[in-house]
Image (cartoon, rainbow, N blue to C red; front, side):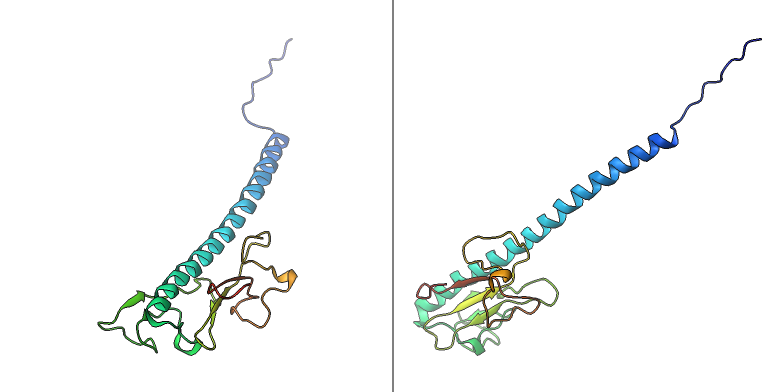
Length: 163
């Protein structure tokens, strides 16, 4: 008497577990890189925003021979020929509107006490960023400034200020 073994199709429990573990490890590696790239992207936008504002402020200074004072400068509002920045009307517009940090609770900071110079600050999410203008919070950041949701770690300034 011979017994014929029926052919079974499918995967064993061990094979399924191995595949699930491999997929879990791959998902973890990919999501970590994805989150870091999102942080770097937001930081790049912050830096670009401040550099674009810096160019608009240079044009403003060429025309007026002064920078806007801190109280006359509002992110989210236009940078016009006159201060305060309410409505530009027919005036020259240097930037419409001044960008602000899009991260919830965060903001850029602008300081110009006498109109002869200025400094603008932003926070940075990427802890590995050591580019120009960046001082990480573990190094103290830019003390005495507030960026809303954290320590100000990136700065740009007028050419007569050294950071």
